[in-house]
Amino acid sequence: MDLSETSFDDDDEVIGTDPDEPSLRARLEALLLVVDQPTPEAALASAAGASVGEVDAELRAWRDDLTAAGSGMDVRRTGEGWRLYTRRELAPYVERLLTDGTRSTLTRAALETLAVIAYRQPVTRSRIAAVRGVNVDGVMRTLVARGLAVECGTDAETGGMLYRTTELFLERLGLASLDELPDIAPLLPDVDLVDEMSDDPADDPRIPVGRRRAATPAAEDRADADVEAEVDADADPVSQTDPEPDDEEM
Image (tube, rainbow, N blue to C red):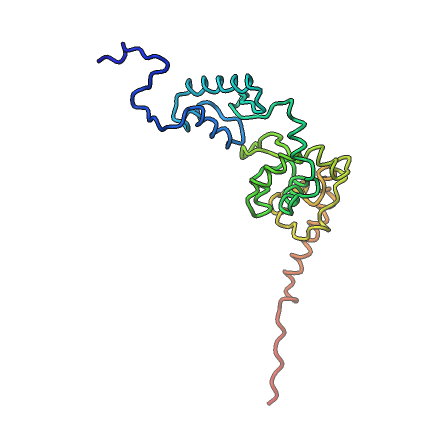
């Protein structure tokens, strides 16, 4: 039989399809619930085991069904792909859940991560993890969800997502700007690890971003003079010559 000449009704089961296999919509629901950024149709199709056309049609039908049912969820397509969102009109309820009673319950890990962002921003998640020495994915999601940190572009060298603090962060600390952040050196003696991550003195993480300044020529000249003095002291043959031992008494 020539299958190309055979027509199928919409309700007919396609031969070879596993009847126990979850529906395409169920598969897409599961996938979109775990992604943390908009995902293109091609990636969803590959994971769901369907064609790009089928995925696109199913997502649009799902979106229309959610809207017709008055659901609080919305499956939406942006320039990068598809993702689940909450309805804009429900934002006050979502904000209440994320902010009420949580202003003073940040964990120590979250506070440390927030401090790294504040003094190093804009900074990638991998750089934050390198400074803290632990994985920060979960903590970063918490800070972003609470509106204390936000994505602000990509790093030109690594392509990683950059993060910065928000106006809410300043509001919670009672600061007008980042210039009012205290110098971190007296509070964090072990900040040398962070210093090693940048060769530019203007990027000293112990100084708030707004007050960082490049080293002045006078300071550089003094540093060079100190180095030369040390070299001269090391090269002094008198200081490096061991005294001859006294003759032993016979």
